[in-house]
Image (tube, rainbow, N blue to C red; front, top):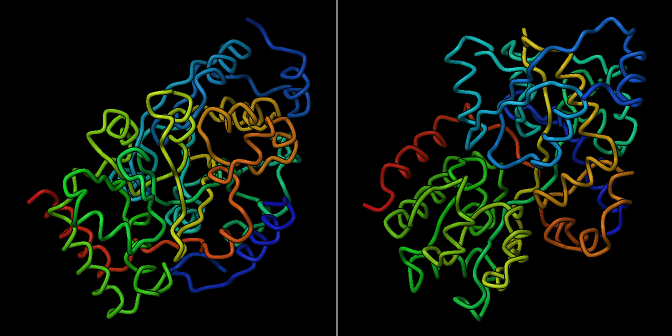
Length: 375
């Protein structure tokens, strides 16, 4: 889709206002590194390590190696499977359990700020912030650019092996019928409440953000009906399950499609957004309060938005970038891949999520659903 169309859509998202519960109010240094440190005042000595908490397999290994080569900083990472897991770990620690940066989805940032989990950012220490499209700055989640830097943009939809489902999957209704029918035992959902709820809600004609008790009950009944038919909840390795044909279909994210397509044995893999619509999301980099290595964190945040580095991120993980200069460097087949940069007609049917972690009915439905998987 055209850049302007996507930008206008995200701008509209950023101007949307909802209540607080939804949170959407609406080997030595290179010359570039030396210039960066000079811009920061030259007195910010880099620490020896950078401690990150992130989704699994979400950063290019080549970029990590390049960062370590340039800076001498050792990059380490722990992973989580959902925003809920991230928030729960911070809450259990009473704040920062010892990381520098993490990567929540945008709508969770206001709640993290209110909980005292995040450090304010000095954007002057991230010169490459200038490359980020204006639609992803001054968002409703962070109107003054104080806490977040865009990481990746994506959707939650349906991925499947074409040779196992030659008729294709076009809608959530078809997804539902296949899951309880011929694909029983061969379907995986990502282990993320915020990504799963849009499926039953949109299938029933509701907003993905509806918290109407009757709508949520409908969604819960659908999830309970399907729970015994699922192979697993898996946010980390569903691409492996598709590759081995242990799974035939996944409710998940588009990123793994890139590697599946590159392998001749799994090149029949398909990713699509359902006809009824679904979820559009933006993950973001944030610095945690009392980060033990803040200078290394700033170095990373600037490094990762160098256009060539950011372009490598998109090619590696299969998600769209908000960095305009990086997008220009991407191969045409990547820029025109609708699984990475959705078409205008698809985007028109997608909704941004809001944080529903405080909605008890959703929490209860999710807990009951998880307990019923495979039973």
